[in-house]
Length: 281
Ligand code: PAF
Image (cartoon, rainbow, N blue to C red; front, side):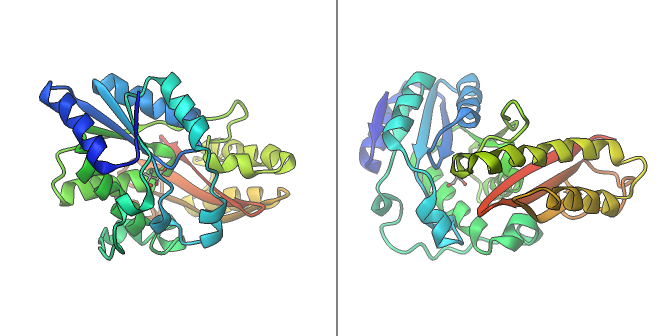
């Protein structure tokens, strides 16, 4: 496995594989790797011959400077994990490589970015698009894999690829959960043991809400999930919204002809966690 900090070295390495007609799969990450990331690498390996993983805590996507400062970083452990996972190339760029100057690009994802994460974390998706487009320009992957835990991010990346004609195929990988149902996240390691125990209710209540769709309206299910979680120590729901999986716009009733997903952001103490659940009716 090759580890690069510099774009030039990375590009030389990748172009050697490209000249040999190898398909390049790409998994962008912010490090603090866990089994969720390993599942993305597995999907990349199934769909490409060479897997490139980037590890870069992207400052432009954090609307909360404290969250950026406290985001877990463990580059040597990540390198070990990636070696064991069979990644071929790791890109751990210095910040100046990604942002040689201030990135002033403004992306417009329309209604997709005006709801949920986009509404509650102003500028977040612009920062995600800045770094992902930059990484795509450098790596030029044939396929790239993103987790479905960040469902809105996945949708926005698909739109970016379409709008800007990237030749990259985007694949989504299902959420990987701990045994008690908590969606795996690098932020989980910042929870105290009591917070960690209670965080498992997020998925448990979401799963239980799937059985409520026959007796309760969409709004009543949203309220039931929110109120049930807010009763639990340490948990405070920021939003829970049931939306059309494609447009991400709120739905008003279960009869609407679209695939439906409930997306949630919950503060567990000061740690912000997200999750989602698909409703099949
Ligand atoms: O999902 C993430 O970890 C990040 O948003 C990404 C896609 C690596 C961009 O920094």
